[in-house]
Length: 208
Figure 1 (cartoon, rainbow, N blue to C red):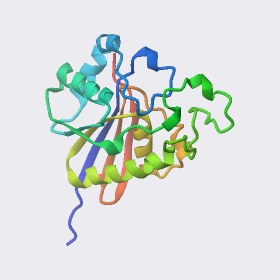
Figure 2 (cartoon, one colour):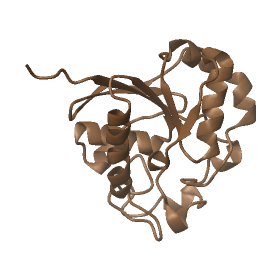
Figure 3 (cartoon, helix red, strand yellow):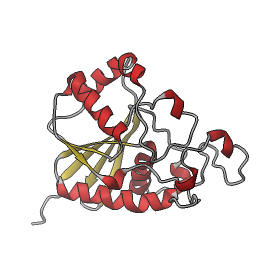
């Protein structure tokens, strides 16, 4: 009799909105802070996340402080304290020499994606393409699924990395993945079963 494969559930949360001075730039892997004033105005969103996220769960953040700050805000809003584990494989795309550039610098570029300044296969100088980011996000998600088989993993990550995880699950092209909406403080839910992935929801918005 074949062994039943355990179902592993993932809740992928995009970090809180960053400080306003960084919104007009391509910040990528820059370690920019979340917006302090939004911590107060978004308090009901954090409370909703704290109430709806499953327990128990293994919590993962990336090396960038905005993911840890977001996770800690959710815990303080009602989820309660749990350990946070850092996973570098789920960090945002590295835009290399373009990081910190104004978004307006990319308006008239011929390879511009309809919803993003850098195309899915385009490699920024000294950086990585979205496709190259997928090449590390996919195996990282597989590793987490095996490590926590049959359990729930909550990941506070970045818009690009979450799109990459969904692209791997659905086998989308990189340009198709860049057309997915992943808003700040939204939840996207994935399930892993055996060697297969299923997208349960995308870009869930918390009530305010």
